[in-house]
Image 1 (tube, one colour):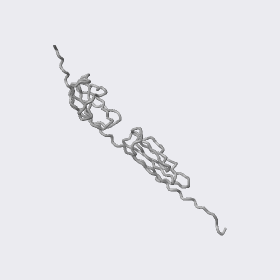
Image 2: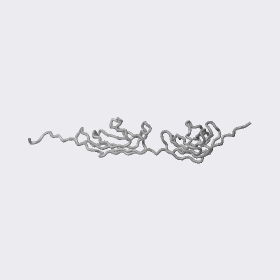
Image 3: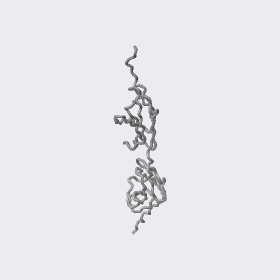
Image 4: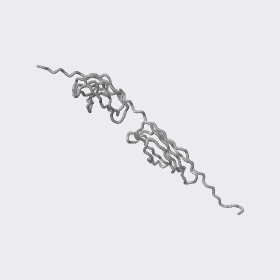
Length: 212
């Protein structure tokens, strides 16, 4: 009777890169080790090794000492990986870790110039330039809220500069808000600027002259 020898456990020595930024899908990393075959498969643990789950997508075996795997980077956390002789096998290597670092917070600025602009005649308007920019945001929107509390979308870009020629004087008032829309919906308020234009002086009136 000839009994086949059990599969040798793969070994792992390092993973590159060991830290990846938080994102919206996945990022590839490369595990170095030995004993990798076309049957090798990998497991992951987000509980520090207390429990393991099989990866949903197969690794790319580059050689007997290198494989590439996809790491879900949507959550900031540390993930352990180990390589097993095959999918379902209990013959597995030690582990290596990949840290998904938290995405930096989005920031932004918005300004109006001049602020305030000058309305010279009752019922008239003035012009200002609205300028905005954002960092670490993949999408942003500029909204304006007026004295009637109407919230209106103006622009859907992460940065820009636009001339606005419809600014009215008090009692009208404007708040220009720059919102983070990286997730596809309204997120955090990145910046805002208030604009209140003084009303022009009323024109004098005359009624009579004495003696005429």
